[in-house]
Amino acid sequence: MKELIAIQKALKAPKGQTNNFGNYKYRSCEDILEAVKPLCHEQNCVLTIYDEMVMLGDRFYVNAVATLQSESGKVIGESKAFARESEVKKGMDASQITGSASSYARKYALNGLFCIDDTKDADTMDNNTQPAPKQIKLASNIQRATLKDYTVKFKAIQDSVAIGYISEALKNQSMTEIEAAKIISHCKTKLGEAK
Image (cartoon, rainbow, N blue to C red; front, side, top):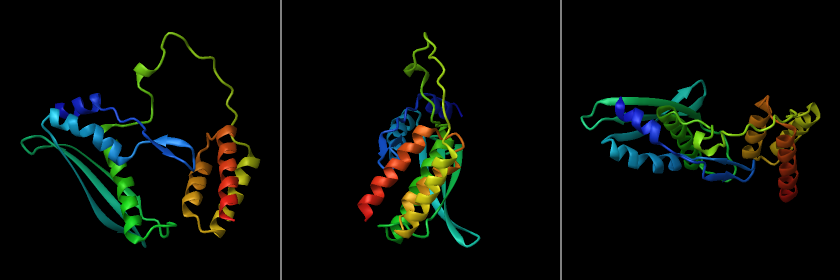
């Protein structure tokens, strides 16, 4: 257990990737693995990840299992995560769709095992001054309705990536007016390119 604690404490996996559609930073499974491998070596541990396909209802899910073992082979920690295969993903064949679901599930299995979250590290903040509270305006009903309209438009051109992104944004009850405006602007640009 002490090995896992040491790895969780030392692990730094910055968000080194950019989503061009949503204009946000994220970390990939590969980013986490690159950061954790040297720490596993220091602690004389072995990290393994494997996938299994699971049928739930009428859909396939990838179940990724991340396991950390000591040098003696004792399991120190294990985490599982599921990701559903998309029925269709524009520009991808069946094997790429499965690979995408696998990467997603593996990333979240690693997040669970190593307690990776999306907060900033304490040493990146200035703790001497307190910022003035900002007035945050949540996305308006008009903006949310506009995003729902864009979902219909993207369905017409079969862009499942855009549909998925907008659907996730609409689920976010704390989406701000600024975030919604950026997504709407990007939708307009993307649809202009599609015509």
